[in-house]
Image 1 (tube, rainbow, N blue to C red):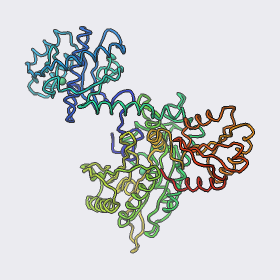
Image 2: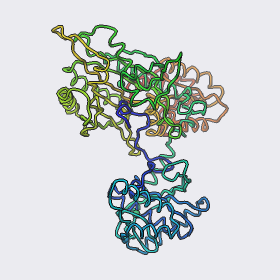
Image 3: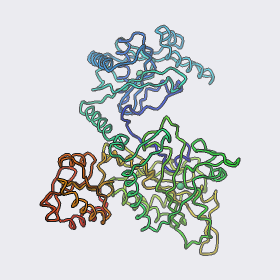
Image 4: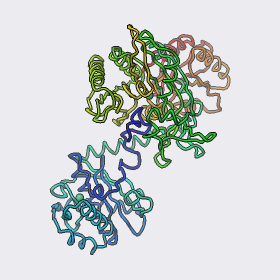
Length: 618
Ligand SMILES: [Zn+2]
Ligand SMILES: [Zn+2]
């Protein structure tokens, strides 16, 4: 990932356990292929489970050719070249045989063979993929003028694999496990090579941990925003515009509510909103440095023999507005917010719901400050983060990335900026980690992560104190109190980050039951019979006049059905009207969790709900 991509969080940079397959990056080089994935204390057990799985598969399919079987986050996989696709019954049988192998407590024995003997061993068993790895390692060693590497194998019971280890002592050290799924995977991640069958499994030290993992996985499936987005009628995706959401009325309302909340916060903080063009000449990106590092990720167009691109970020355009006036030290901080639509050319194969998109909008802003204002401004920005994440009950976690080795700009200024940011972080009272060298090449930065209801971590917001990219490359200046020209610092900041991604994360975190203040439908009026519909419409108007989003269910459904439909749609309040309520101009209130409240007068209810929406509580 280039530095520019970190400039604002890429829309898909989350650390999540996918619903169907565990996280498993492609491996191409022979070295990567031989890496058992031992980077975490549990990985020796995970990888050992992969060996035991390969033992079982080889017993069932003696002609199976083996790819690789590394440990991955929360589990393991092994790639197999098999005569036919695996069925669920096969997986059950493989699992059963694995249980036997674990019970047999086979010891893992490491052996070393000289290169020729090692190659002959795997060639003699028809294991072409293993031979290919060995041949690659051999040529790499030769090319580097190094001695040919010895071949190490691990053997347990009847099974031997090409492997660098490490492993657990014996198979009985493998805890409770479960095979999860089978997916196609190209050998070495190369679509010109054979498609193998990748079997995923998960293994844990205790049954309790395995049960918890399986629960989280099932829960993640239920909460998947792609499913909920359709069920709650929020958005859809269509192949005419891959990676770009079509926002339905309810999704658009949710979007607007979030945007309005952030705009109000920004208004209070003295932001000025601007809007800058979508289609921008390449010379702008050459000046900012994006063309050199980032142009593969941009959509380009030829117009009148000139190259333009759709903007992947708003940053450089803000400088045109900055430079439209001579700026004095008194004009700073200048806070320019820009909700511009952004496009990034993500490969179609990696697009995924709202979390990996081609078109998105950030609650983006560029704040130009004098160096002596940096600390206060960062502190205020951390206050913005705390306030806005509080609307959702989310606890932000902060990471402070400091000067990388290849940083641009004056080291003294870097040191001073880092000192100011460090002080602002300490004063903010929010816990943070320091990641030395993790800043952007032009800016120390604060990344903000949240943990959702399933314990998954998402990177959302970013605050970067840009010393170089905008200030120097675009020659920004202000006139100080002595009439001298000085360089401002440009702070890049996005609090939600990408609105698309933030909505995707919120949808899963709340499983679609959004907090009242941002719920796309806040209340449904449920007339018990037809004769109550007119009063129901009247009640809805009373609530709409208080800026509440209300619908009337005037369908032929019975009351219980109307309530069930509203509950499935996760509507916070159901307002039930019968003869008595209509007569007294009251309404019986039911909450989405099933709790019921005594009848309340219409105006009193309107006051209460309007205050609740205003308070923006999670
Ligand atoms: Zn191994
Ligand atoms: Zn920016």
